[in-house]
Amino acid sequence: MKPSGRTRGKAPFYWLILAPALAVMLWLTVYPIVNILFTSFQSYNYLTDARHWVGIKNYTDILGDRVFIRSFTNTVIYCVGTTLFEVSFGVILALVFYGEFRGKSAFMIMAIFPMMLSTMVVCAVWKTLYHYDIGLFNYILKSVGLAKIGWLIDKDKALISLALVDIWQWTPFAFIVMQAGLSSVPTEIFEASAIDGSSYRQTLFRITLPILRDQILLLLLLRIIDTFKVFAKVFALTKGGPGNATETTSYFIYREAFSYFKLGRSSAASVITLVAVGLASIYYLRKILRED
Image: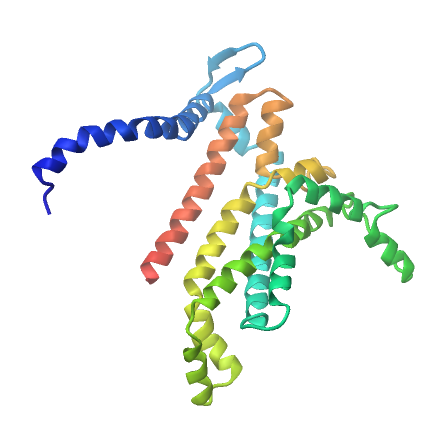
């Protein structure tokens, strides 16, 4: 349908109203990306404001940097591990607590409580729990005659310990999304399945999970994006240590920029990370759309 003459006459007025919001959005999104891309080809120290063009040197240095490779690997492991556990636990909890029962409201309030807390508050609590000498976890282990664990100081356990904090904080989000998805499904579907003689397992894999497919895929995408940019938990709990055992790309970028004042290298690492996440997201979305 072609726009009427009256609508076309109002178009400049609509664009005039939209212009301030559009300008702010471009300033906050497009400009930073363009600026980071431009800076990634420079050697730039913001303390002295000295800049000079170095071409792709920052990229070749970053891609050959052992610490960056380790940080990227840690990020992928953390991202995949936490996402799979959070979504799986969220689906399981939603199935267990499906329907109406006494105390459901209280349970839902308890479930969302970890999400309501600031990440730094969560990290402060868990850092105390993880403490080698006075932490609750090691106290329990010692009480039952087991050896204490260096949750945050053992390079083989530190990344897992970080992941546990994220799983505790954000599994409730997955649970709420799955619970909302299940609540939107008419109960008549499950009643008809039961009348037809389907077992719980058959109903689960042939009806329930296929119905929840879109919510599960969306949840996977949201959690992958969020966990891939993890920074606060690393900063608050381990500072990337011990060694580089919990170094992530976000913390690597932060350290290059604000500890070593190498904004060129930091920007190059940001661009590489953005491209990697963008390609993965595009592949994921195309796969979903193709299946639809």
